[in-house]
Length: 405
Ligand code: BEZ
Ligand code: FE2
Image (cartoon, rainbow, N blue to C red; front, side, top):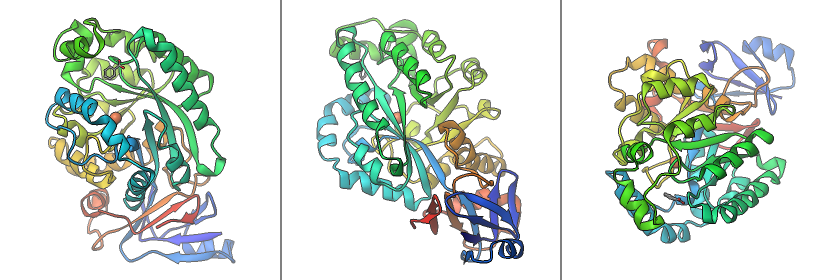
């Protein structure tokens, strides 16, 4: 048994003072230090540095580790030129992304306090790294393929990757999961099979959705920038599905939809009514020039803030991402937004991924990140804001009660 004490503890009821947390691999009790010491006489007591806040470990629900080698290869600024550059550079980027590169991306996430992440896996090449890294990983095996002629082959490859992620050692903290690449790139037959599989095995499910105006133009009218793209690469000028058809396919399985920048208020309300959630990737959206997610429509819903991959970002640091979110949503009241953003990468993110962490409550996993502020906060209602503005790296990280930073 261990006891950790910090100036503030972030709980589902807000920041509390003069308290400590007793834990082994899970959280055992939250009380005053005196009370915990009396109850757990042999516990080892750890005092964090002055001005520290004990948080549950932070959660990055959406990242692509396989593209971690990208720095200047992919074209930013607009979605279609970026997608073309992905096709052009993909083989080179994948070949230069070895286990050491991906492990260093995991370590950078760990130093920024990320104790769990959702890895979107196109090829399964990061499975070994995800098994080795101490973080919990929800391993989203991605399904792609709009051409019916290749459907069986692609589905076979997908189920093999899914199967491998289902047989990882328990110590690897891997949860197998399914990702649908997008409405424009997955044939409805494949889509329905994969959703059926997610339901059958109760697997977390995720999908990129309405990331760009080009995607909407293609799905609704078979027009726009995707038309020459599909004509060139797939010899077709008809989309395989519509926005409405795609959304309705997920009606009975809560799904984590990524981006949604071109989703209307009505569509967002529909997603919320079906229990779905949204992954918001502000830097990726800005770098690919796709617009701003209207998070003001998501205040009653669950959304996360996530980094996406280094294929559309400059770091996997969750605090860099939270600072970008604060800037992007300039119309929102600052303190309130900061508090909501912290919830989006802790408790809400854990619920989205179906993990028993992300909250400092009795019975949750003992996953913690200690944030040390440069000075004592003058007003408690600003702790979330100072956390986001002043943190590049956290001072300590625990996963299942073990200290990793
Ligand atoms: C496809 O496999 O159909 C696809 C892949 C990437 C972009 C668009 C379509
Ligand atoms: Fe993504």
